[in-house]
Length: 252
Image (cartoon, rainbow, N blue to C red):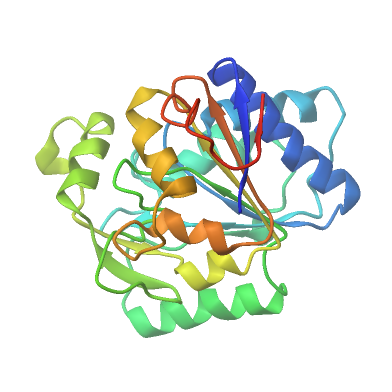
């Protein structure tokens, strides 16, 4: 079952999450990191950049794999996840471009694109620490609620709730891509350690279901209950459904 850490606010969530990543890199300089995008991890990436600028971490031997990318967006599009990662992290630290792996949003051959990404993952012997956010409907990566979940990398139709939630990053909802390519649940669950960050009352129900709900494909994050090494780091608002309900292994 996941360990839950309740922090005072978003800044503390970001700091604690960054400490997990930094400790991993210091322990193993050639660590393989699984990275996430969206509003939640921005603070963590800022902490990593600050640590690098202070000379406290070296990312030159680190390899990264990003969870997902919007289908149809080129890497240079301001709302692509490739653009996001270079803006918030990669361009500000000494990571080697050859060690960065982000799924493309545009490709000629879906099967070959997926096979190439999966081979890179296999060649690296899996992910040492996987960073996750969570959707209000329980999606992790872009693994949406479904009758079944896909093990490997795949193209997915985004749920209406996800499109609506992500529309805040676009000029209008019609601009939001309705499909994405995402790392599958198998690759996520194969990570040696998983760190999930959440902040705000809008995530409170999702966090409660992740930890205390029934394990079901209808709520993909619930599968984290089955992983042997998961740490969920939340602020008090995101933890509001947990407090007083006897949630498992809470640290404050």
